[in-house]
Amino acid sequence: MLPPPSYRIDLRPCIPVRCGKHIEYVGLRDLLLNAHRIDDLALPLPPAQSGLYRVLTAICASITDLDDPDQPLKDWLEHRTELLGREDGFDTDAVHAYFDADPDAFDLFHPLRPWWQDAALAVQCSKRSGINSLIYGRAAGRNLVWFNPRHTDTDPQPVPAREALWNLLAYHYYGPSGRATARTVDSVSSGQLQAGPLRSTVSFHPRGRTLYETLLLHQVPYRGDDQAPGSDACPWEQPAADPLQVPPEVTWPRRLLTGRSRHAALLVPDESGEHVIDAYLTWATQHPPLEATDPYLVYDINSAAPAERRRSPRHADADYAKFRALSALALAGDEHRPGCRPEAFTTINSLPGDTRASLRVWVCGFDQEGQVNNRIWYTSLTPPIWPLAQENDPVKVSRIVECCAAAETLGAALRQAADQVWKDTGLTRRTAAPPRKGGGKRDASLWAGQALADYWPRAEQAFWQLVDDTRPAYGVFAAAAITALSETTRDALNRLPKAGPALARAVQSLRRAGTAPDDTLRPTGGPHAQP
Image (tube, rainbow, N blue to C red; front, side, top):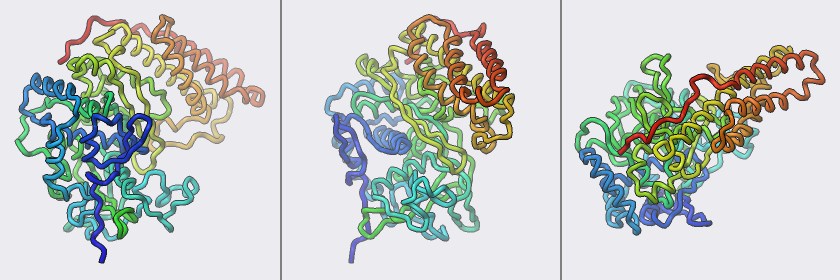
């Protein structure tokens, strides 16, 4: 008789990492033991990598004693600086002690406590959800089959256990809202999901010279109110939560980074434990999410919105160029100014000089609709950001902010102008871009979508030229917008008699938008004082 399937993610080689030009697979234990020899994570599923950074950060806070909420800020910063100076990485004994304290907790298929899953779903759910519902890129339910014809609900293919792990991470952080497999707990039965805590967001992850340095750069000091000793725990460090109870408060750092999932899952392995053949996917709680500030997100403020929705994380948008991230990273923190750098970067001035000079940022955005549909994910890696930071070069950062504002202003003007040309040419009732539920950027004309797709690469090229010169930014981006619109409508000029006059009016509107506003940001004073 075969033993029960087991897959210890602390021991099995399930995480791809980059070492020089090579990709290797390691378990979580070896990953931490050798983090100082590893360049970075190399998961092929970026949303999973963004989630894994948060998981590893929570674990590293424990093994380095950077998780003490009562430690004074000065002592915390000095301790992190001391750790950054170590050449032998994390303490070996501390790493082994963490995983050996409860080895069953890291078994992906443990019969009672599978890692970050709820074994009760096998009884509480009347049916399984299907493995295709977990794996990103596979068709499931009513999704279009022809995008991936090898995977259908009628013939679901098993997935290697390590790939199921990656998708489980993405599901907890970026999972959908809406209908899911029904779950019955006592007298409560529901199949409604709330969106994952990172759904539709863009994350900014500090990147060091090694994975060891990267994980220490991910650490954020505690700045909240008093926290009860022993109250903070990751989901796999405690019994499965009661889905009917109000979730515990968001404590630092474990619950903040790993304890806000709205989803529950249970993987179904094959007999060998090498593959996952099915899954239960449903809700973990029906209570509203608790307020929390993720340290790797940029938060925007809409003063016109109701108080409960005034502050929101910046949404991922694959239509826009990635240089937009620089304005958020370059600006020093200011509670009265929205869109500034995430909390993970607020202690940048306290880092050792060599660490600070080499700090880059890995950006991971997942452009999703609120419910099921996933549009696209995207990533980018910035150059070292300290030379561009407000503390180091306030004149340059003002220029960066001005250029980003100009690019976005002209992008919005281009969208409006393209829509108007479309309407004035008499194409209003013809084929338009697929509407987006609830409105939004994809409720636009076909020409608007095409023009913006042409504009943003031009805008990115112009941005990098403008950062180091003194040309009026608004005028340069207006020229890029006019070129994009002209290229989009070129064929229509010979076919449609109303196109020429409509385009001429649109060009004039873009030229007017290319006049810099009176309140264009000017270089500010010296560096902001930060810890």
